[in-house]
Image (tube, rainbow, N blue to C red; front, side, top):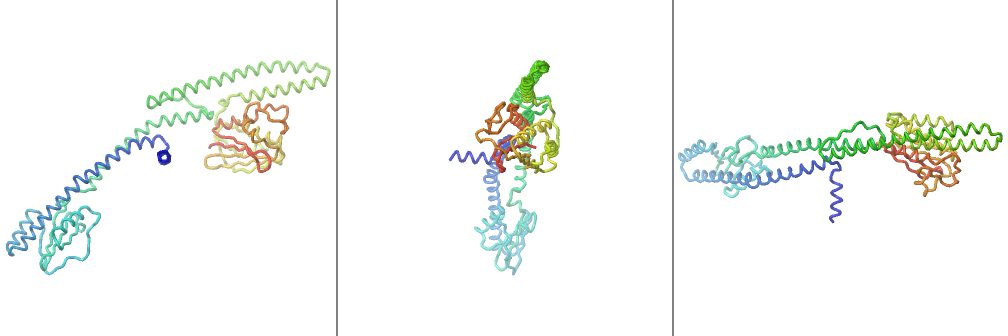
Length: 438
């Protein structure tokens, strides 16, 4: 039961920290205001109005008793005293009946109290609290006529409920507005830290981050900035080390090539030259795989045009393109181009027909690359993304391949915050699905 209630609350409650903190502040304020309103209405406003109404009806009952038992002179004198001292307007209308139309408001506390008190003391009556703004029209059946009494509404209502509700609501709204301003200032540093972490995770260039906000948030920001600088320093050191390795390895390879030129046996020279070329290609691919992606800046480019330009270089009529035009993406253009080149190269090496589909769904750009080649076993889907991993010879891989194409493609897509998946193609081969967030 408690587990189900917990799941229900998780679904109902907002996901963002700002709105959760706002609920923590706003709910107690609202509960206190409602409690004050209920206590006031029950103990003060309603009871006071009931007492005022009961006292007024008692005065009217006294007036009716005097009116029925005195002579005409005393009646007029008594009515004048009421009009002067109690701010009443009283008159007797002969040969008139009470109105048939009911104008009582059942939802009004004032009407309800007045009706309840009159019903217990007077048999026939009629009143109207809406025709006049400040007075109540009360009519009582006496003998052959009607005694009409106009009295102020303030005699049966201590104050307007609307004014009290306004005074209760305005402070609550003011307090919640102030809380929203303070909470917005407290959550803004967290949002900035999350945005900086996301950009850095995508490989974007993050400007100097300045922690702000509460002490705990500042500490998290300082630790993130220190971690970012350590990672950048490590990447720079790796690039410098690889540049040195590249220079050191290329020099002996160049000397070997020169020495091969003096070998008179062409067969041996050709075999050794092929081995040297393969070593050089392996070295280049390894350096490209290990190269830092932070060196290139993000730019906004037309992904549809990029795909068209890549496919055009292959001059292959078997590559079919089905894509939406005008889809722009903000990222590192050369890396995306290299990723697509690697994937299309693999497809052209092992398949005859290739289909490329690109479309935008909500806030993602999705690219499908399908072929009719031999495909990849499902058990190898995760392994092919590992560096230097080669599957069996069933796909007839070239000897010069070192197993870095899929690894590089995966790293590029994930560095842009996207995802790459493998599956079975409807054409009988491999289907590659790339998802890039816009």
